[in-house]
Length: 133
Image 1 (tube, rainbow, N blue to C red):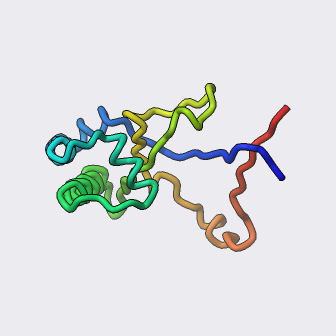
Image 2: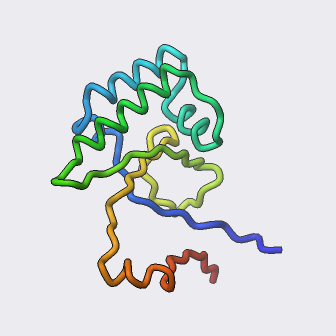
Image 3: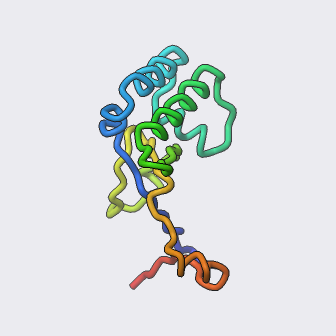
């Protein structure tokens, strides 16, 4: 049985950068979290575990995602925002993960396949693995 760790990676955006792009909706999310006595990290952990979230917080995050999509729109493309959780205790000391209280804001739509990549997408796969030396 393997005892190795599973690698993870993703494009992320800091909370400070989100505040610059979407100041009103970030503030609304922070207000909703505060009213429910949740930290951003607690919210992210619940989301990553698939736990139910109160309607006020869920709606505030959905509004932030919509605002982010519009703030990053360039012609007919835009970026999508997702939330995940990073647990420092389960991570590695060498991890370089920008997070706020464990909350990681993931950005989807950064990488787009080339026409050749699209044509051969059924044959070419992205693989990740850990190497221990």
